[in-house]
Length: 157
Length: 381
Image 1 (tube, rainbow over the protein chains, first blue to last red):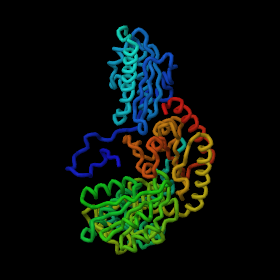
Image 2 (image 1 turned 45 degrees about the horizontal axis):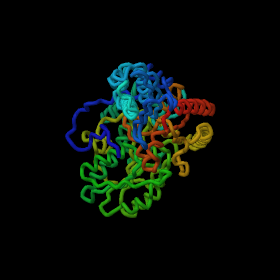
Image 3 (image 1 turned 90 degrees about the vertical axis):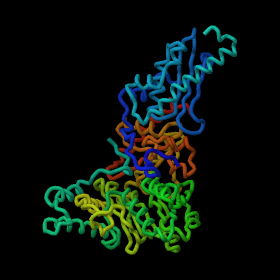
Image 4 (image 1 turned 180 degrees about the vertical axis):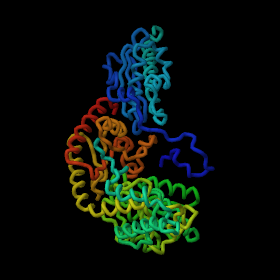
């Protein structure tokens, strides 16, 4: 059985809630826009895929797949597919917008907070949904690096 | 707006509102005051108690008013286990209870009470034999809901009551999801305690009732004045209590016709969704259910995404599970039914009600098909 902060009656002295339950489904218009019209959706063709990331448990919870094309050390194309809540879809969509056109080094520096800030904020209790996007990008970049190393061409990135 | 979340709450019936008004505007006295102005309020509370007793087929003294369904459940669980503390420290309940019961049992566990959580079938029906095996000489309470709030599946409470009574164990029934939807007779169900909540049947929020069969041992949760025979201290919510009684009487009078009407619409909605959304599956389809509820898995899409997507189409539905409250764990009810985590995460509850019209069904199914198709185009599964 999952336990949440609501389980305050279980053991320990009663304390004032540190994290009062705020609005849960309150998404701003930009988040809803990225949820209803996500950018950069879909797999890249295998010939154009230089890196691929898959994050999330195979049987439960949210999941993200992310594809990148890298030319001259720069992300030229990016695509994603996501199974998850509106926050997960919107943050994945915004992440692809932030990463597209960036150099690999710049893309690596994108944080969860950057994604959330670009969206104008998401509900506090939905923050955990935003973690997949950055993790997915890092996975795709690592995959790209591994492929470069395998090709023996890692030096020309 | 099309509101298909009647298991969450219902709009106040205008007739109930009218019945409550005098006790907010004119007869605002304290029912405990001895003068006539106070006793006017007292009389309203006792008239309401008589009406509720009439609806339930019990004696007025067996009806306690509370601050809602959750408080009624808490009073039953904590009140009986406390009263029978010297007899035993074991409670039997099911794996699919509402948090009002589930988390209260968890709290009892933390206080040293042993709790057995009876499993359910794939259709979400509590395993009667498992309850029978769990009941022991130290068991002081059996608590099982009448209908599950997420799936609408009705539980075999009369059979469970026989088992409990054969062992001399009091039986509490959380009837929050059936009160006002089905005829409700604690005696016919074999309930020693039974909880209900006014806002689930077009009454006001913040008021509920607990039926307590006379002779059932019970300690109060709240101490203070001698209100509600010393079992629930605090000045009575007079207007709320009047509203609860009015709402219950109206809902019960209309329950049979309304169950048939809403049941037909629910069945139509289910058929239309199964036709419009490939891979959709109804949870608990093989079990008897309350007529207004359907809970479906829509594989490949997240339940909350469907809820928000439908909201943008002006349709209110629910995931029915804890995920909507920010907890990423899948529904404990669907999980107990053996539904895989991803399918549980992909489930959405539609609960129809008095204001649901046939044309709403077509609108909702059209919107749902569009939302699911869009989400599936994004989905990585």
